[in-house]
Each structure stands twice: as structure tokens, then as C-alpha cells.
Image (cartoon, rainbow, N blue to C red; front, top):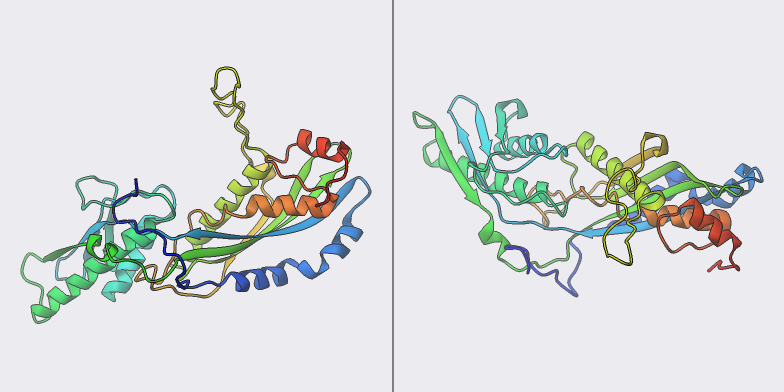
Length: 331
């Protein structure tokens, strides 16, 4: 069942923005893609093979109904309230910046209250929808507050002024554009021909995610997503007991994830764009686009290094050795 407020993705309609080609071009330039064959020839030492890979990525954009209120005391202080949650993504910081922009005041004049079910109801934190959903509600509330102050002749009544906005109505309108974030991930790998071990010394991600509200928190989310994709490529595997149907890998002693020792040099950059079809801030979601494409880029780099196309994850030592001993599959 489709969540309330989520519209079916339109077919045959134009993209709101589509800067995938820009991501690929910028990434190729920064990563030295033109030198990939020379790199393989010069950096391989006989035992270790070197390869480079790239993959394109995209993820649809969602906005879910949310409510937000904003209060001003009339002395330059504003309080935004919304029952959103910050799970470490910097939502509180981003909402403060969004509200400050909408109110045309300094961010130091804005206080954000979140994480309490007594506050105006907000959507869940998922599908890279937090900033677009909660930020839209905050913008609408701030716009309504400015309108209310204007109706009062620019003077805030004693006791302050508070307004609440709900985005359910505007999200009920069918979309006119297909809204997606795009990206391109590049990876460099080494493959040990004796052990089958894969290492990833460098990764680059270039993303088109609309307006970047906060460069620090956006970079952290993108880099974190790429580490998740690395973990997906090299470590993570759910092993099912074929007799009883439960998972053998039920805890972190059996289900392996990437650690600091596995994380390579990672660079995440964004192209310059704004998308006001997706949100009134011009921003898109960044929570998951960093994951998408990373594992494929690593697998493509392994193919470049070894000539072997491995189509199952994770790229474990066992799987790499099995592919190396199998008849050729360079396709």
C-alpha cells in the first residue's frame, strides 16, 4: 500500500533536473579516467592487479506530508517545531538553515525543536525524504508567519505570534516532472592474485542532489553512503539456512561490515544545481544516493583489473578465487 501523500512516479514526463552526464564528466576528469589502462600497466606488480571502475546511480525523490509550526516572540527570536528526528544526518542543523532562509534572518535567531511526538506531526526518516519533507513544512510555516506579520502591519502582537503549516494538500497534486537524484561513483581497486583479496584504495563520488543546504553534513552523508556501498561490495552477506529458513548471519560475529581499515580515500563532491520541483528549497535527498552505484563501480574495477566479470556479491576471497579458476568469462 502506498504511504499517504506519496504520488506514483510519472512515466513519460520530463526530469526536473538530470545532471548525470555532468557527474560522469567531472568525475572522469578528477579521477584520471583517461589514464586507466596506463594505470593498470604501470601500477600492477605481478602479484597485485590494479583496475578502475565507474557506475552511474540514481534514486527517486520522495516528499511525505508533514506539519510544522513557527513562533516568534517579536524580539527577533524564532522557534520552529516539528516532530522530525535527527538520526545523525544533521537534520536539526539543516532545518535551522532552511527556516532562517525562509524568514530572511540569521540562523543564530532560529531555534529548532524536534524529536517529540507532542510537536506537529512529521513523516518518518527514510527514502532520503527527511530534508525535502520536513524542510518543505518548515518553509511553508515560515512563509505563513511572514504573511501574518504583514497583516499585523509588521508588528508582532504581545505574547508573540505562531502559525502552523501542513503540506498534505500540496502533495495531493500530481507531479508534472520525474524527480531523481543522480550520481557517478568511481573506484580504484587492487586484487591479490595469490590470495584473491580485494582492496579499494580510492573512491570518488560526484552527485547531482539539487541545492546543497549544508556542505559539511551533505558530504558526511555521501561519504558514509559510499562506505556502506563498499561494505556491500566486499563484506556483507546474508546466509540462509536452506533447511530451516533462518539466517546464519544473525549478529556482527557472522555478518561482516566494513571497518576503518577497509575505508579508502573517499572524495564526495556535488555539481551545482537547484531543483524547485522537488522542494521549495531547491534541494533533493542525499541519504542514500551515496550507496547506489558504489558496489557496481567496485565490481567494474575488479573486472578491469582481472578480466573476470563477477556478478554476485560480496566479492569475497572465496568468490574471487573461484572465478579465477573457472573458464574465462570476460563478458
